[in-house]
Each structure stands twice: as C-alpha cells, then as structure tokens.
Image (cartoon, rainbow, N blue to C red; front, top):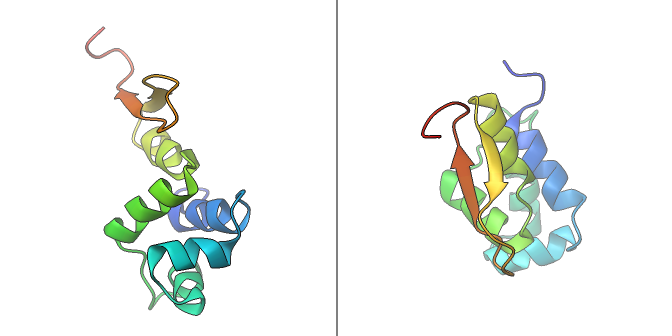
Length: 97
C-alpha cells in the first residue's frame, strides 16, 4: 500500500479546499453524510467511485488527487495551459520526448 491512500488525498481536497464540503456535496447531488462516508479512508465498506472522483475534481478544481495518482504510477501531472478550466497533460518520464 502507498504511504498515503488516494481516498485520503481526495478527502483532504474536499475538506480542506476553498469550497465548503457541504457545497461540494450539494454540487455533486449527494447528501453530505454520504459524501463524507465515501471519502472516509477507514470505512472499508464505503467506496469512492471513479465517476464521483471525476466530479469532485471538476467541482473543487483541485488537481492534487490526480497528481497523487499520477506520481504513484510514475508519471507527473503538468498543466497544459493556464486557462480557467485547468486542463492537464500527463507525461511519462523519458517517454515521447
């Protein structure tokens, strides 16, 4: 297992982000308690789905969870441009240069 779980990184993005967690839940169309349960890395019966993960990235506009995943896989996350939508380009070190 990695030193930090991806669910914990997403939890940190939601709970410690610029937007209140209750607002994130509302924008996702989820009850606040359901979102918190899905983000609890210690609740082995609750899971964070990939669609919810992507929605969280879009709503929070926080690339840290995606950057964490990329790093764990040997990639680095690099912004493609500086537009307000913050698209990112993923590079594999030493490949395609």
